[in-house]
Amino acid sequence: MTVSSPHELHTPEARPALRTLLTRVIGIEGPIHEELLVQRAREAWGVGRAGSRIRDNVRDVVRGLVRSGKVGVDGLFLDVAGREELSARVPGEGDAVRKAAYIAPAERQLALYELAAECPGMSQDELVRHTGEFFGWRRMGRDIRAFLDSDIDELLGQGRLKEADGQITAVG
Image (cartoon, rainbow, N blue to C red; front, side, top):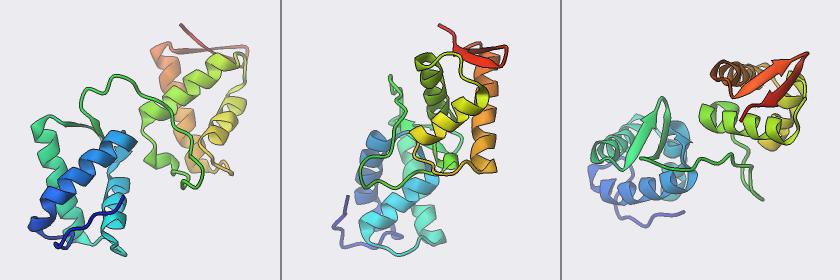
């Protein structure tokens, strides 16, 4: 998406166009990490990097969207308030692969749950590997492994996954 605004991204005068852009991006990509939202604004304006003034302007607009009730916040992730259905998204053709930290825990957990439901009886290592492939990660570094192991622990704790004899299955 591109924005044709006569105002520079860091200025208060850019906020109406920025509000429109952020609302659209959150609607399409939500839940989206706030860092990716800043990146989308920067790209739409054709700005090379986002300094503190740009980041502050984006945060001010996001706060307004949250106050208006249009956007909800969950930690560092923003989404359309009251979104009914979450989906785990694979990178599309030509899309950059998102870092594990930029994927909302709820989205990672949904992918884990759905993969465990599709292929019951996988080991935790297999489930982690398949989830990594789902999100387009070519390597499974410690950071990715830590996120997914933590997500699996959360799902086990919620009773949405169960583990027996080293095999994980979805519940319900």
